[in-house]
Amino acid sequence: MDDESPRASHLNLARLPRNLWAVSLTSMFTDISSEMIFHLLPLYLSNVLGARTSVIGLIEGVSETTSSLTRILSGWLSDRMRKRKALTVLGYSISAVAKPLFLFAASWPVVLVLRFADRLGKGVRTAPRDALVADSIAPEQRGMAFGLHRAADTLGALLGLLIAAFVVYQTGAAATQLGAGTFRWVVALSIIPAVLGVVSLIAIARDPVSAAPASAASTPAKHSTRVRFSPRFWGFIATVALFTLGNSSDAFLVLRAQERGLSVFQVMLMLVTFNLIYTLASVPAGMRSDKVGRSRVILGGWIVYALVYAGFGFARTGWQVWLLMSAYGLYYAMFEGTSKALVADLVPAEARGTAYGVYNAAIGLMALPASLVAGLLWQGLGAWPGFGAAAPFWFGGALALGAVLLMALVVPRLKSTT
Image (tube, rainbow, N blue to C red; front, side, top):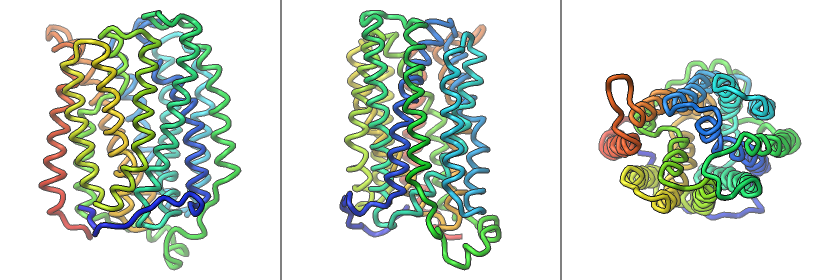
């Protein structure tokens, strides 16, 4: 559907643009901070605050979905202003300010507000940031560039999880429940990389001279507001939305691991393994998409997802969940960066910010029903008993297969231009 003849791709670190380094470094620091907190958050909600799975699903869903319109607005503004950096810095700053406040989160409504604030920051920054990357790299290297960005982002997650795991180990390696004191120590340490991420972006990134032809740059409002996206772009967005409806928050994977018998420390090490695989596979997956086409790599990622989620449903022991979580890293590596490169392939340069806003909004809008459904399937509602902890994963795997069929059979038949 991209697609584009096969392309040659190679990784030449010395010739990569400064904006790619800036965004990658900022994402690494920010994910060090975020992953220290947010993978422990469902355990904090469940073990310390006593929240039920339906409440955890509500928090995760609302925090993603309510920032969706912000993603569209910030992307559109970055197209209209021809300025990506300012909005990207603003978004990272909002998230950095929100994180220390988790020190005072003593009830789940407070967690909801703070989680929303953090995701609001992500909503402000994501579309302009992705457009900044796409503006700064040649089309034949987009897959590699987004793969490198995802690798840096995930390396940060890996380092953040190692730090959090060290704190958990020092405060009780064998504990099956997370303690409030442990969580607050992790939050306090997360403040440092959050600040470094914002500083790195301010110091290194620069807005490209022009992300579009000169005529478009001189009248940005005209071009960014009148652009029409192709049917193929909208078909891809609809397919991603269907897939995301079954892709509930990864908080449920953490709860599944604990429910299958892993201690808090073992859960952290499991997540380290996941992020290691994700980091190592992201650049090769992105480069592969430059050679064989984006859709093939995305389809492969979704098939891996369907198989892994089915496995989560059937898992009986903690080590099985751990093994499946490792394979889950391959799905992320194959889909996350490649899908963003595909968005840039399908839209004109002067509308990339808006397109990334639409793409991220589609994912965000599906996050609320996806996580709510997962929580209710796990727990049950009123007179209807839940199907059990395995049900959300079988549901997600089934929708992933539906997305594969749409991506393979329907979307390629749509027009690639308006």
